[in-house]
Length: 362
Image (cartoon, rainbow, N blue to C red):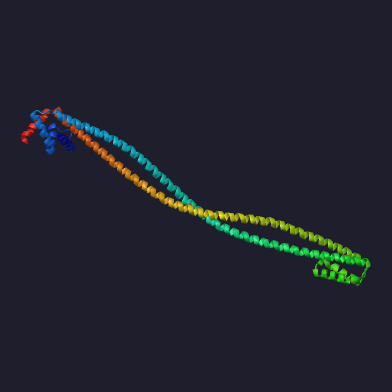
């Protein structure tokens, strides 16, 4: 067992010092310079001197070579497995990095586009708010105008009714006079009608008022007929005028119904639009806040993934360097083993000569 340990140390020493151009004596000489190598050579020298079998040393060297080859195969297998694992880890990390980068781009675009949409919504909601105020003012103004129109029609229609009643009463009085009733009997009614007609101050009644005034001073059949014709004409004009006013009232009422419906529908649309915009503004703000927070998280995740990738790459480089160094070392050790085997088997004369010289010199 001591021989194995010594030979292993010799291999380590020889790996650093031996070159292919050195002669067997030079190889042995370099081994001899090391204290443990000197001990091994002493053992070899003792075995040669006592006639001990060199084959035992050759068997040990063969075992060492076999062990080195076995270690290399194991190292190759581990290296291959580590390489596959490393490539999988790298691929996963690169995929993770790509994912976080894409998320950062998407979140940045979402934040920017939503910020732009928020600005547009805030501008529009101010415009819509002003449109609502304008709509409400228009409705109030038009409603007041329509109310004024209706009140005017009510007043004028009532005036027409009163005037027509006065005309009808005047016709009855004149007809009574035509029938022979004394004026004195109808004087009170006549004066009331005359006063009502004069209150209206309507130009239409001026000829009638003059005729009635003349009739009060002088009743004759010719005047009565003329007044009755005038009364009929005036009543016909009043009926036509009242009908025209009613038509105007109905037309204005219909127009207002359409206009008010339009204003109310527009008001409803504006109110709904404002509510939608205000809700959108709230949602936009929430989206922006969430995008900013997610963007910060994704940035941290990206940094962590990039750090992990750098660590894995350094680890892989270290493992690769270690594998290559150990492989190189085993190759050098195998070369030394082969040289020792060559010295011990094919060139025993050189070894014996060296050992003899060693005994004489040392």
